[in-house]
Image 1 (tube, rainbow over the protein chains, first blue to last red):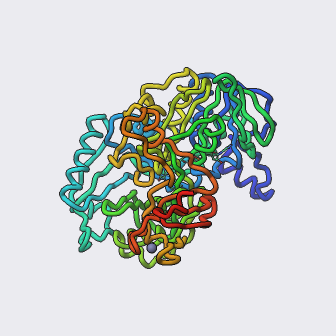
Image 2 (cartoon, chains in turn blue, purple):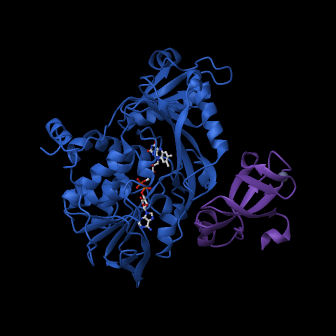
Image 3 (tube, rainbow over the protein chains, first blue to last red):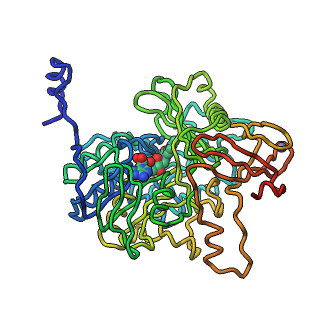
Length: 416
Length: 88
Ligand SMILES: Cc1cc2nc3c(=O)[nH]c(=O)nc-3n(C[C@H](O)[C@H](O)[C@H](O)COP(=O)(O)OP(=O)(O)OC[C@H]3O[C@@H](n4cnc5c(N)ncnc54)[C@H](O)[C@@H]3O)c2cc1C
Ligand SMILES: [Zn+2]
């Protein structure tokens, strides 16, 4: 056994210098069957499921930086499947089911913790909307419970239930939702894909996509040209830039989303809570820090850092919900670049260019999608056609009008 | 980020509401589906200089065209949207 308490103790005698890398660092080959552009959660999961489910192992994942440097290592780690629209419900439920078996599957402790996700409601109208969403979930076989104020009070003692402006009236609870250690997801999928023969090429930025007579034949990279007949793009916040290399113009705007971590405290919050009167979500990590976030900043950005108005608003939401947290200091804060789509739902599918496949438009919520996104994208790339679970997530739904707009906000990326 | 409003001077960005890229031209009502699709959904989304519309709702209430580097948030230029100079 490679990882064990005994190995740790033995390693202590030699300064823990005996550990070896968990995956290879190979030189790029001149050609592969399939290339995945972007070594985030989605790209790595795609490579893993291509190998595992479809036996396609002559695959390389091309990552411009190191794996985990993008959004997969920057998110607030919440997983759930509490959606209203059928296409989204079934897709995210598949993802939650894959999370439930992930650690056994890839033999890696990703700290999948089904501690529940509780969406608070603050008015009768909001209760009705949540009841409707909960019913839609239950009709699709997904767990959902509508809690009244007393049940919420018992479950989350620190809440300011009688806030003068936004009293807590109850909540919609998905007990199977929760959190997952985000870095471990990148590392776990990377190791599992590597074991099945996938080459993970870091510091390998794609700078061009070669298209000949309407089909892809390869890419240009900072580590030289690489040929392939099938290429999947999974570049998250940089999707527009990468797709433009193949002449595509996407229904995407890039926006910055910030996240915050407080100093570590004793266990105070054992579930994920979201505020219904503002956009705010909070949980406590196993290290003790409170992990929380709110809205995107709201304007186009590739800066990976946001501005102060959102910081102030997020802090206000935090102390409005949990007055006791006003005594805490926040330790760290950062930003990631979101690929905000025109209807708030993702794109996983084919493109007008033969052999080129697209995975993008994840908005705020792509971390929870990681396993199903990789699973569906691998199916799409391997067979050339979408799986029923991602059949609605096409690029051309914006042209045809079959959009998936959970909020009904229209073609306004910064409002989804 | 402070936005240099031509009427009010440099103000915090929380006073403004963001709309999106400037210079999108609304197609004629009978234009093709492609033209409407491009106008409604397809965006250049550059990583660099971006011309964009902001509304100074908590100030002079003017629409402003801001030219900003979206990699750094540095603002190069701001003009009133109704000003022909902004349409350059
Ligand atoms: C602050 C924050 C909080 C979030 N909270 C949640 C949450 O609680 N729950 C949830 O479900 N989702 C959340 N998300 C969203 C989620 O993190 C993303 O939707 C998801 O991680 C995107 O997929 P990915 O992991 O593949 O992206 P990434 O990890 O960003 O992977 C894309 C990769 O592509 C690489 N790349 C880009 N261009 C090129 C190129 N030209 N050549 C080679 N490689 C390239 C990048 O370097 C990057 O590593 C949050 C995001 C942020 C920023
Ligand atoms: Zn003004």
